[in-house]
Amino acid sequence: MTKKKFDATKLLAPMVLVFLYAFFSIFGDNFFSIDYLVNILDGSYYIGFLAIGVTFVIMTGGIDLSIGTTMMCAALLGGYAYNSFGWPMGLCLIFVIVVATIFGLVNGILIAYLKLPPFISTLGMMMMGMGFGAIVTKVQTMRYPTFGMEDAWFKEIFYKTLETKIPVGAFWLFGFFLVALVLLNKTKFGRYTFAIGSNIEAARLSGINTKFWLAAIYTFCGFCSGLAGIVYSAVYTSIMPSTGNGQELLGIAGVVIGGTSMSGGSGTLVGTMIGVFIMSVLKQGLMSMGLQAHWQTFFTGAVVILAVLLDQYRTSRGNKI
Image: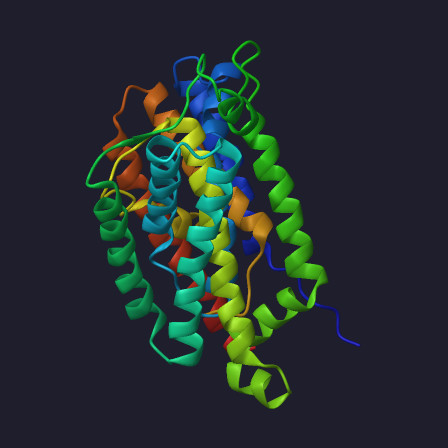
């Protein structure tokens, strides 16, 4: 029995996270503080939910470009139901999840059953989501309750409490991460995700209903976008129409930086969360050094390119072996 060789490249993302935090703690202005730690967590909430969902999709060898606009469209419609129809806040939050899940289901049907390429299908749904929210709300900004209003519990449950400033959103993200971790590693859903990504034809020949499970994976991704919409609404309160385009890149970047292969069949949710926190630390660290947001965009792009090059290196080395 041959001993499996340890892949040291898997430690690269955790090492980068530790290095960045140490670097900004030394050279940033008061970066090593509770306030900045809370800001790092605040900047990870909705991106983390997006990244968890799209991790499953990328593991199948696919892509979902619509998660950002799906998140914003669902949040817009939930806010519209709250402001225009007077729905209870709890019902509006359920509505946000339902809308986003429907978007994911449509993606799954188009890709799994109608054989559309994931890039084209999700690109079309991205544009439809961005336009649909603006059409329904008549291009009006939707506002969720903030501290001091009647439904302030919404922010205190999903964002942070007014008095203690405890970032309770981090507990929601961590809790859902644990659920997704079990789903990926201990259930049929996760096993079939890896099987489809490794070789979808071999999975089909082995008796797996690949169409059903592929559609289910995209539906789950839409569900995660709905959760991201709830958290985004709690953090930022005001939801503007025709936005969300570009948010999907942050979620996908977290997955790629975390080491999930774009060719499918391999990856970890732990790596995804590390990738999300790398981006958040990078953003807050650059701000602590007085640099503006476009520097974060530049450096995040560079890190993504390096992560993809590393993935190609690992893949080519594995093929040689």
